[in-house]
Length: 332
Image 1: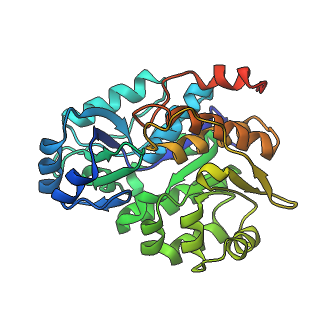
Image 2: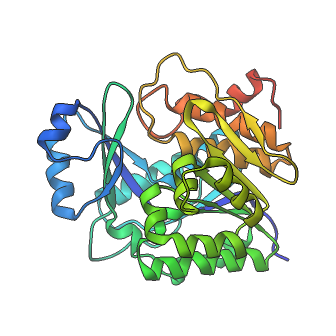
């Protein structure tokens, strides 16, 4: 049995976010779909980056955001993902290192650029994401560092990585390595449209390779092709051991061995940007899981992290999650 060196190892799309405040008129003029994630090509990525007003460049990617959040809680974590050998790839690598998270995946030498997501945020906090996947999905099983996966107590998989067959194979391979080493595997469904594209594969993973599932309400309903939340929740409980379903201001519902647990969201004075809310909820929940805390406490930690990240621009914490948890009386 390999030695556990990390509480969580994340695997996902390595992306640099380009954040810009805007209004609905701008979105309409540029043909940008409001409050959803749209996949775009490299030319469109350059076009929208140029059009962004006072853009802020910051490392993102759903799984990487979660890993950065875990580091803020004080967890030991590592990350596996793919960037190109370019300026944005160097930024991503530097910023992961600054959080204390090892990131040693070999960069892509030639081909598409490092992935970016141009995110336009309106005054109500809605985020319109335009994502060029670039180098991030040119990820194969050869990029999976087996020793790093085995060294993690929990492997956290980002559903967005499913958008290319070779990446999907790497994703499944990593989960098999973790399970064979006796580790837990967690999966985030990432996005409703991602679920629509990969429903059968996700269901197979949930039923056979995954111990912990993260989803928001829309993703859950899409996974089980129903409009009834309770029906979908019951189906999820039958398919996996532990799950956390976020419902925005309604909080979250956590599934374990007994009856589902509803946990209230943390109050926020003003929502500035919802980018990263689900990612940071997962960070808090996984931190609690890695420390053996009760499921309800795990969800509370998730809401503490989500409340912090939506109170400012950007998908990663600006305050110490460890300090916020201790202030709330949670010590781990």
